[in-house]
Image (cartoon, rainbow, N blue to C red):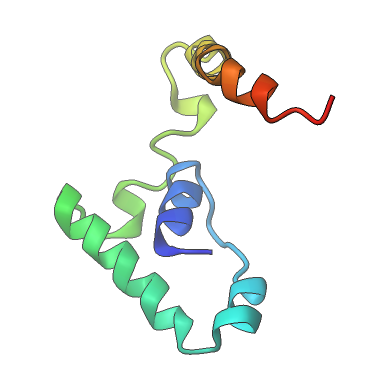
Length: 89
């Protein structure tokens, strides 16, 4: 898990996330990397606290909840050649 992964989870509304796997792989010092990445992203976007952006992209906060499903469908269509090409069948 990276700082970018943490930001995605926070944008989706997470109040906590687990980092056990990445700490096992990268060591305890990786926590500072994750925190630094989150802080850098917040500075670039102009946020001063997690609460300012937590849940901003949560489905319940969307004006059009089906926009998310449409976006996933479009993404699948755009990646379909890669999916078919890499298919073991």
